Image (cartoon, rainbow, N blue to C red):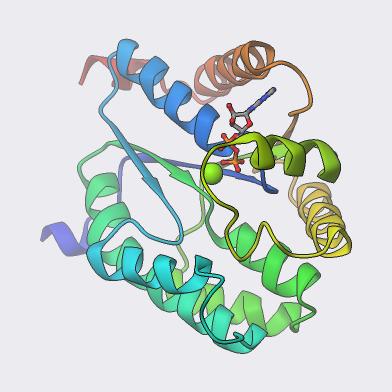
Amino acid sequence: MSPATQKPSGIFITLEGGEGSGKTTQARRLCDWLTTQGWQVLHTREPGGTLLAERVRGLLLDHSAEAIAPETEAWLILAARRQHVDHVIKPALQQGMIVVCDRFSDSTIAYQGYGRGLDLRVLRTMNKWATGKLVPHLTLLFDVPVRVGLRRRRSQRASQNRIDREATQFHEKVRAGFRTLARQEPRRMVVFDASLPLESVQQHVVTFITRWFKRRGIQQLQQR
Ligand SMILES: Nc1ncnc2c1ncn2[C@@H]1O[C@H](COP(=O)(O)OP(=O)(O)O)[C@@H](O)[C@H]1O
Ligand SMILES: [Mg+2]
């Protein structure tokens, strides 16, 4: 079989949640921990992950740009996703790596669907089209009250991006959307209470993943 037709043997883990829920922090810590456990890890993010997709990220997060229609936002994100899947995620999975991705398809449903009000069915179809039906093996959802997440973001030195500046009501819809998704797919999506201290959240993640690997008999791959 050529590499392109081989079934990917890696593990695809995504981190989801609202602004300031701790995704980026936890992704970094999770990758460090997986590496110490002997895994080959690829840490990436969306929108972004390739040269072109990172440029799209810049367009999406720049609040000085012209007003962006929800549909335009969706198309840009999905276009970037396709690049990311083809050039970064699938090749790493085919090499048997663990891919840890900060945001993926669920963010599109939560933000552009539940948040902006675009048709969920259309978005799901577009997501399949963009990902070539690639679905994460496991999704960690970091759930935090909106005001807590936004406060954390505001205390960061980096300036506020276009999404951070959205109304609280928008962020509430996104949070509710994520929680609905987790209820619909409890086997794939696991919810963590992200209002806990950073170290506690990390400990819960490590405990959960250790069990998750064990349940699936994945530990032997560690020797790779
Ligand atoms: N559990 C936590 N408790 C307190 N502060 C946190 C926690 N998780 C993250 N933070 C802080 O909140 C800010 C946003 O975290 P970040 O990981 O960038 O969130 P996200 O990527 O979800 O927007 C950072 O300054 C980070 O150190
Ligand atoms: Mg982040």
